[in-house]
Length: 402
Ligand SMILES: Cc1cc2nc3c(=O)[nH]c(=O)nc-3n(C[C@H](O)[C@H](O)[C@H](O)COP(=O)(O)OP(=O)(O)OC[C@H]3O[C@@H](n4cnc5c(N)ncnc54)[C@H](O)[C@@H]3O)c2cc1C
Image 1 (cartoon, helix red, strand yellow):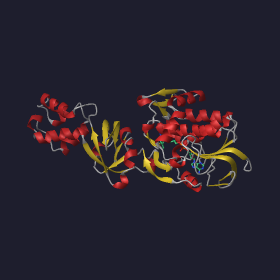
Image 2 (image 1 turned 135 degrees about the horizontal axis):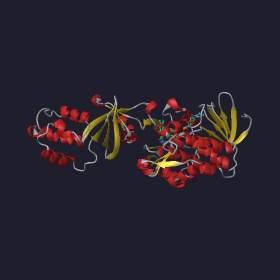
Image 3 (image 1 turned 180 degrees about the horizontal axis):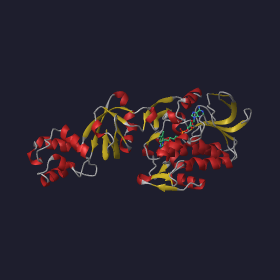
Image 4 (image 1 turned 90 degrees about the horizontal axis):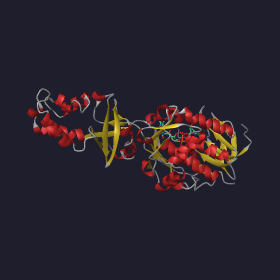
């Protein structure tokens, strides 16, 4: 580390978007310095996908993102799903497709990705300095990048600091402050891809996993949900959280839960089944289609008589129970806090960013990439894909002469 050197490009943050950007700049013979506040590079990559790193998705498309349409479309055109696979192949990473188009390294470990970057960056002699938090940036003709004990200079600067989500693993608000110092505005970040805290008490179901369809304001998600001591988690719940987090300032939000997502017409299915099994008590009637604890909760909740066969139940109570199974209303009061949120909704205002290059429209020579921007995706590899895409696209501009 030489604190009087002038670099072509300084990149703040050795996360997904910073690493790809650094490598692409270095491959074009730019002199690159990466400053990272943590002791390790790529800490969120390492914890992503439960340590397996779901790094992209076959179904990458603008509709999986909450973002300015022009910006996300441009980024995904320039770095598509196929470009991403080719990129990681060329880096030497073997990968495997899993359900719903999700891609993971075949080793089953996220280190396959960080190690591949480490090797490639070292082949290009990129300087990466860890334990260096950038605290302040000033600029005239050059950018002066200040840490607690050094100042570095560069012609171009990339803020790839990520978001404030998951502070126990490198998440911080530092990047927003740096962007603001350089004239940008920040849409206040909200926790997203985080469990849904419910008003209703589902403590009898804690630990139960089931397939479900959730519907919120006309949007549906389907997949596994997990009941917890605060409410629900799991992919189907997480994928509604970006929509819900944006509305919670207006009050509690209602969603409906369908416990039989594979059945098209639940009412007629259950009515037919009720004729077939009219001699069965409710618990036995629901056995085979519902988890026992969910069935018991429904029976109590709707006042079905436990010891009477279906034919002796009140028809109204029975129809009501059948209806509830397909449309169980639940009330979301909040999302789980930052230390459980995988991403932030909000960030640097993308109207201030050139959507073709990720260069700042306010501060020439400054580029902003990754989750620091006001772009977030649903779960399934989309957030990492955007981090790679934005870092890659910024590098295409930075690779140009001067
Ligand atoms: C638990 C968890 C699981 C996830 N799983 C997945 C998944 O499977 N698939 C998926 O697509 N996405 C997943 N994500 C989201 C994904 O990890 C992020 O969207 C992605 O890492 C963002 O990349 P980034 O480069 O923008 O930021 P980051 O990867 O967060 O990197 C930013 C880096 O900048 C550093 N930094 C910040 N401020 C400064 C400063 N002032 N000075 C120096 N360095 C600084 C940070 O320490 C960090 O290393 C997950 C996130 C979490 C928390």
